[in-house]
Image 1: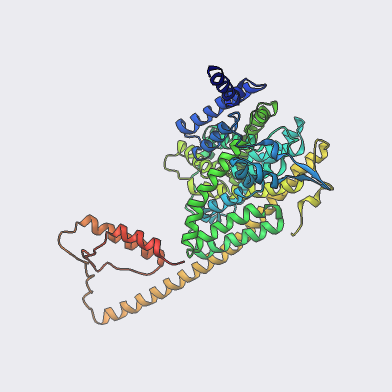
Image 2: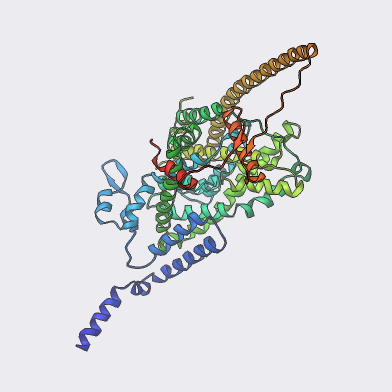
Length: 406
Length: 147
């Protein structure tokens, strides 16, 4: 009887997850679990984008527990069927997939990011941008980070799909980064969607640390002290026309940006119309929260040991921060140009808000401006470029998707 | 305007078989397309902004002119027969309601009148004899309002 007891215990031990840690490459899972603890610590104790980083880090923990089988990276391998070499066997996933496999379909099929954009649109006030349309230019300039990082990644010898995915981190927009990378990256690439999302959200949380030194370096004390006048009030009719106009113009020009921009503007129209209160509220709260949970935990689940513990991950981390910095610098430089052209009416600090981390980047502009003149309120002026940055990075995403093969 | 950016490049970039010119063209096309798109939006938004702002200003100027004319008329009649000015009736406040509460109610009404554009006046402040807690009533209204 003792023998039977011992052999049963032995079998259980062999089947348990603990045995997985001692299998070949099992130590990598332990490292990944420790990294997930670090991200959980950053989210909970340091408040780094906790709404996203916490689900992501927990997904990371779940996926790296051997034997849990909640996510199978092998299911997401592209297969060649006829002429289509970008084919995933969703039937197989539905039949054999774990919980996170099923939820991850929403990422791979590009469903979650546009729905998040719907919620963001329903929460955004485009008033400051309508009052000062020139802010659009600052939002466009800050996308420079995306394209110059594309160049940097190419120099490091990465594939075109990897270049595009890393570059989009410079847009400082989580859903857009996930949208682009999930469309571009395939299993032959050395990085995954989870890597890109981790880098994007970490850097977005670090905006208040990354941006101010660059802002101070590129501007003079005199420029930082410029006080900007009040914005004109915007009528309801203008706010109603805006989302429709932007959708038509952008979707006609760059069709691949339509899902992101279209949903963003639909959310905004729901809010501004004032007649769809219930739907607007759902988009802002319940729907957005549900999608955030799904998106976070599944994107976290893609960070399996074999995709993260590579040299490419280090490259993503380094190129990501470069992308952010160049974006900030481009925005500030165009801000300086606008300052000169308007004879000192524009404070260049609002340019850095063109990276789309809403509203963090605008708050940073406000804070740095107030360090010089305590009574200067740049926040509303910075919100213009900030929301323009959201539109700008969605457009840049569309451009990348139409240039790079996927 | 209705073109696809992919057509700007002869073929899509894939794998690692790209040249320096390909990458340069990605940077240049990418940035210029983003700028062209957003500059178009700047133009459209500026144009309709100018139209609406202009219309609003015109309306305001018209209103002001009308107001001035009315005042001038009033002044004329006032000179002829001076009338005692009608006192602004203060709202009737029920006993036991604090001034602070009245101020909050007045501020809320003022905010509403600014939003709707109608001029609202507080005539009286009375305690209501409702059976249901107002928060509960608001919750009920919120959940039972039809689509």
